[in-house]
Length: 511
Image (cartoon, rainbow, N blue to C red; front, side, top):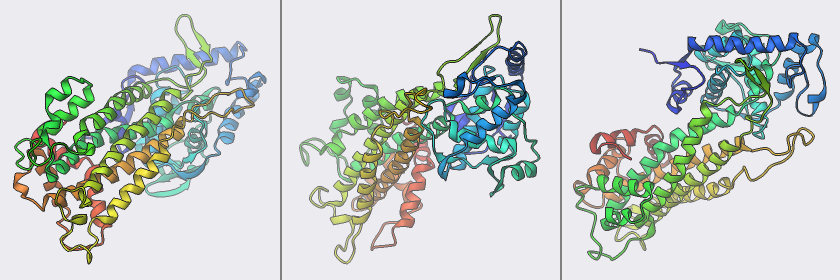
């Protein structure tokens, strides 16, 4: 049965967003929300009839908020807002980001605080369900006053303008809507502002980055376990007693994961058996991976809250003591700080993974493994250059992990004198996640190659499954090969979550 996501403004989950954005699940409005949406619109219409001055409804925007707009020009005001704000630059967002943006904006306006017409909501629903994807350029949002620029590009096809992708082809927004059989709309008072005054571009990037990171954190533990096994790592460092006296949850969970993954291993060693201590990239995996997990818990909670938040302005409260209040929920600071944090915590996962790669390929560090994990070195380079790639990626991550949110530049003639740069932070974080997935996938390749220089039947319960999952796609490298196809296969094993899925079948849930 086809999955349908009910939209009510309050119950959307990260998994729901990913199902719609990445896996094309359909959406429909929760019938219970209709009355609230209609009441909100009635409030706007009544305010207009009474001639009350309300920001963005019958006034200009930003620094122009003191300019009154005549009744005859109200529709033009909303259209001009979209025209003027659709000025993004750069490459288009991936389709999954566009779909996430549309869903998140839909969810927000369906809360019933935005004053939009039902026809506007139906238009967005139809676009999502029929696959009309606006072409939205990545750059141009400062992340306060909402993601005005990217969201304006989202709205253009709704009014028969701009560009959209439909069934794999990019065409004019008007043509895409016509081919899909979706009626365009005329924006009425408040509607243009309601559609673009929000944090949905940054949050769309944030949701997908969080979803991928949650899998990556677990897969980093799995890949690390195979590296530990292949290097005859010292198991004592993961003894529960060590971690209970420094009881950070992330650290405790990672240590437990490693113990479970390495259960029954005959390749790990005890302290003093072959050496007294391992280098930090092995011994301190619980502390480093665990530190990232602590930060991730905060990031995920923040993103989960934002998904079901109302972030436009002004807000319509249509209850008994009705009011239209101009506030600042469009300001992206909560997501901005969270996304900068995500970039840092994921960069650290890649950093320590690259150090384990170096440990395996470097004969001075690898405890007897052949140089660069190849039998006939010299004529073969082995895994020398994949380590270069990992080094390049972690180095680039160090630049990208510099926080975007600590910078602010005034806009709108200093009316908007502090901005979040949250969309920049979210885009950077997503790039860092992609880089980290590549680095961990290179570690997986190296760890499996290293394992083959010993008895693979002595690997731990979980580390052996990790080895087998890779070996289904990539064989032992006897001599140099064109490397990138094998790297791509390993990357897909990590990105798709296949490694996590298969290992959990064998050892149970990875924390």
